[in-house]
Length: 158
Image (cartoon, one colour):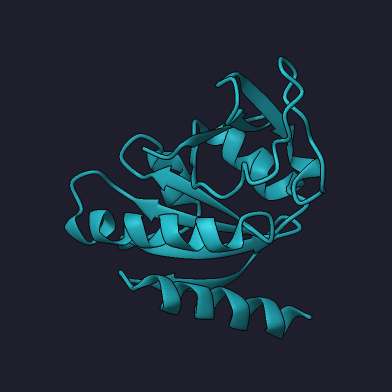
């Protein structure tokens, strides 16, 4: 399970100081700043974790409204390669937090999302920006290869 969660209004993150859950609106992702509503601590670094997509509405809002590119990991709990790639995605999130968001879609819980997006095998990773998918990769791979896929895909859009 990822440290953060995605609902239809934003990314729910936990304050590293007091533990309070805060919501970062999709339109403000990637902006500097953001403070905990309880203790005032900075939420910088909050996107250095993957985030679980909670439902179909959350997925649609994320893809449509995110201010940063979104790497979606389509996975399932029973999938061995999916479990192998999860810690690699954690490394990628830690090293790239804020440049893009890594969202995890459990295709067992959110079958309609996987079907709607044409996911035929898992793990599948897809990059989205401004409401559209622009790159896709299938299969498990180490963090360095995931970062190279993202970097190359983003560079080709520039």
